[in-house]
Length: 582
Image 1: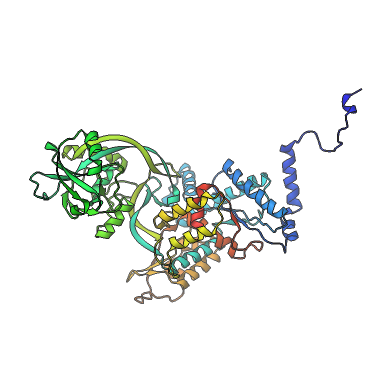
Image 2 (image 1 turned 135 degrees about the vertical axis):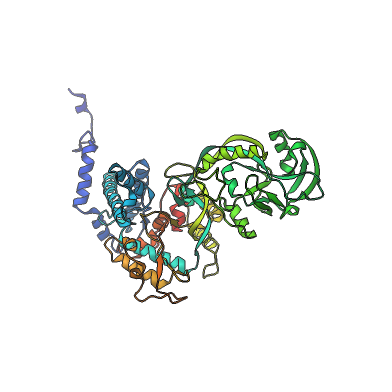
C-alpha cells in the first residue's frame, strides 16, 4: 500500500510546481488580452476615486531594484484601493529630458566621430528624443513584466508636446506672480558637465582638501598699535582667494589682537584663540580685545593681488572652526553673496564654465582648473609670507549626483524662483509651501519635519540650465531697451505653438523671435519690434514638478482628477520631486 493513499489530502488541479518563469508572461498576456485595466475602469466608473500620481522614473537605462520597489509598492496600493471598491486608475509617467540623456547621445556621436557642435539644436534634440523614446519602451515592458497594471497605452511623457505646452503655461504663472527673476548669484556649478545644478542635484561625499590659515595685512594699524596688524582667515578652498573681496566678522563676538612676534599682530576670535595657538604653534600676548562691530570697514591688502578690501559684519560667522574671521568671495558662496549685496560688493567669479580661471586673475593662474590651483596658490601664499599654517583634511563636500565629481559655487547669470518674494496673497512662496506641508499627511510622520526644514532653509530655486535637451525658458528680451518680455499673452501664444507642433518645444529652437511672438507684437516699454529669445532651458525638476498640472488637470486622461490622494516615493524626493511639485 502507498502511504499517501491513506492520507486525507485535498484534491486539486493546480500543478505541484509554480513554474513561474513560464506562467507569469502568460498571465500578463491574458490580462492584456482581456483589457483588465479598461475593465476595472468600466466597473468602477461611478465609484469614489483614488488617485496615486506616479513620480516619473528617468528614461535612461534598464530598470533596477529601486524601480521595482517603487512601482510594486504603488501597484499594491492601487490594487488594494480598487479591491476596496474605489476607482483607482494608474497612469505611469516618464521623465524624458536632461543631461544624462544628452551625455549618452554625445557618446554615440563620439563613436561616429561626430561633434555635437556640428549639429543644429533641432538635430541634436531629435537624437535625444529617439534615445528617450527607446528607453521608455524598454522600461515599459520591464514594468509590465513585474505584473503592474496601468494605462500603459497612454502614459505621460515630459517630452510630449501637450505636456511641454502646459509646462510653459505654468512658467507663465510664475512670472505673473512676479517671483521669477534673472540675477548673477552663486549657484552649484558642475565644471565637468558645464551647467548649473539645483539643490536636489547635489549629493555629499568625502573629499580631501588643503586647510590653510592666511593673514591679510591691514592698510592702517588701528587702536594705536605700532606693529603691522593682520586679520587671520581659515579656508579649505584656497582657489577662491583670487575672488576675495572682503573679510566677515560677527558683530557680537569678542576678537583679540595677539602680538605673535615676527608673525605680526593677529586678529582672531577670542573663543578660538587657544585652538589656533595649539594648531599653528603660535604664542604671544593679547594687546587689545574688541567686539566684532568695532572692526567694520577696516581696510586690508590682498595677499597676492593689487587690491584693497574691507572687513564687513555678518551674522553668518560662527565659532565652530577656524578663526572667527571668514574670507568673503561673493561670487563663490551663498552667505558671502548675501553680505556682499548688503554692502554693495559685486559677485566676482573669475572662473569659466569648465572651471578654469579667466584673464581676470594674475597671469600665473590664468587657465588653471580651480582644484589644480589650490597648491599653486598655497605656494604663492608661502612666498609672500601670508601663510600661517597648512594641513590636509577630509570633509563632506558637495558632488554632482550625475558625474559624481565635486561641484563649485559660481556666480553666473541664471533664472531663479524667489522663495521670499511676496505672492499676490501677501504670503511668500516659502511661507505658502510650509503651510501646505502642514496640510499633508506624511508617512512616516518624520517626513513632515524633514521636508519642512529643507524648505525653511533652501535658497532661491535656480531653474535655468545651459543645455539643449529640455523645455525652453520662454521669455524674450527687447533689443532696444532690454526689457524682459514675460506677458501672459506671450506665454499662452508660445504654449499653443508648442502644443500644435509635432515635436513640441523644438519650434523654439527652430524659429526666429518674430515667428514665435504674436503677430505685430511690440515691446510694451519702448515700442520696438526687435527681440532676442532666451537660450537656457528649464531645470528637469521643474519639468517633473509641473506634472500635477500637466497630467492631473488637463483632462487628457479622463480617469484622473486633481489633486492626487497620494504621492509615493523614496525619502530622497523630500529634496527633489516632492519639493518641485510643492
